[in-house]
Image 1 (cartoon, one colour):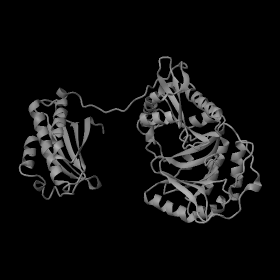
Image 2 (spheres, helix red, strand yellow):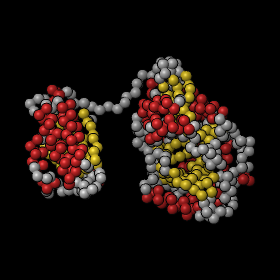
Image 3 (cartoon, helix red, strand yellow):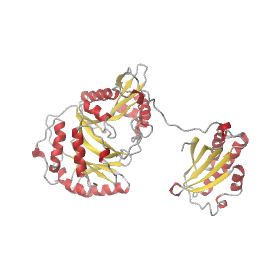
Image 4 (cartoon, helix red, strand yellow):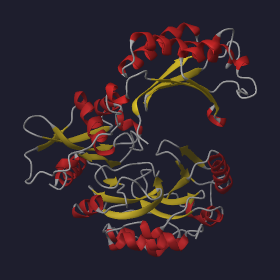
Length: 487
């Protein structure tokens, strides 16, 4: 259902703000075509309803808020005053909710008054006033709210642009491009805060590349983000190309520019997390030499929208994790678990880095206590448990954190184990017994390489809806599915 001339105002439960209610509702009613007398009357009714909400819905000295909305409806205006204060039986005793003349005044000034108990959402008073002797056409057609609609016509030829670094004072262009590509649905809210992006660019933690036309118009961007000062790898992502400019290789050139930048900076490598509801970003990464190394099931919530690609996700979106060495080491010593040796060798083989099978761990823990942290800064419904050192207590500690995350209704939990820790893999059996299962690896994460496990909290995954381009990616997906205890 489309709303017409809909607006919402949130105010503190303070009588001092009642005059704001009056001004706001008067202006809204006049906008919809009511004359001064009726606009003032509607505002007076809203003032009374808001006043009673402030007086009776909240405990003394309680600091809280209430909301008031105005909306054009057929032949009139609807004003709603909603709060999450004390419950009230409107049907049993509507007048007792209103002081003195309140309810009588309200009923005299508007045509309909409704009281709604909304359960967990609180309660509301709804006021409706109809137009007089005029028809709705006299006040304009009922409007329809529409979201940003990108151009559907693609440019017939490659537009002229160049790739360059984005400066801190241009951070707003990143936020604007994110909106044009995703609306406000992107799962990482920092994308919409140019001041935060500017600070990260200034600090050197974020490197952004922009595709800019000769007129100075930004048509796309992509970033490298260094997640901590000691990181030897960077994540490439937060990419957005305006819908009308897609299909001209902009994303490929942005990615290549940043890969070269990481190489110049002497970083070990670059990793990315392409989606699996389409193959475009996977194909681009494969052209640049990235190799799949993990399957992160259910990473992104279904609410995320990809404009001009797919307007809805059928399930929590699975991501691939892929990696590219920009300065590959000559030799690496790791202690991954023997039970996953075959698939791990296949992943490193695709990265052109061999692992001696003698290094596969069969040991026991040498440390009494583990070192780990819990990170819940990712997309909604996800969290990560990062274990830098495994002790004898690791399974017990992980299970404790897992139970807390499950209690908080976290849907997917990823677990990162340090494969340079000679004893880390000796606890794989215990961790898999509590529900974790294989996801893949990520070189340079600690900065030692990480083994990734994952846990699904009653999240249904339809593996047939996961689209993977490379043979290695399909092998990984098959292996992950074969170890998923939820199937």
